[in-house]
Length: 132
Image 1 (cartoon, one colour):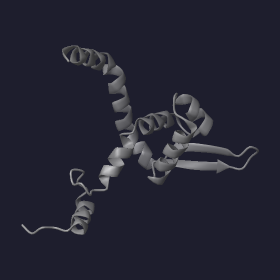
Image 2 (tube, rainbow, N blue to C red; image 1 turned 120 degrees about the horizontal axis):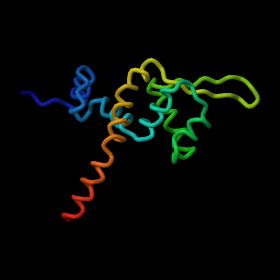
Image 3 (tube, one colour; image 1 turned 120 degrees about the vertical axis):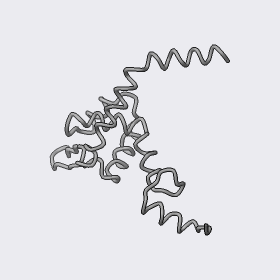
Image 4 (cartoon, rainbow, N blue to C red; image 1 turned 90 degrees about the horizontal axis):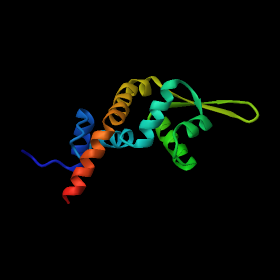
């Protein structure tokens, strides 16, 4: 088998989108959607369009800077749409795009699994730490 250059591996990864290939762009997307703030925001936006301040209240603990950065990244990836309504003050709403909506069931399942199994995870951590 011939050795491939980095450019060739990148081109092949784009054709097949295999996340196990180091150069595959899906790794960036997986990194993005695995982020806790992304997960929480997508789940929060399941309820429909929301203003920045609503999201800030709904997702406790997120800083203004992180909320802004995360919403911008989600907008860039086509998962969230930002709508500006001219008013005084200007109204800005965020909502899931069809692409973002297609991701929602996965994110809801992960959130639900975490909430359901947290006691078991805490017990496993305690057992692990006790053995060390």
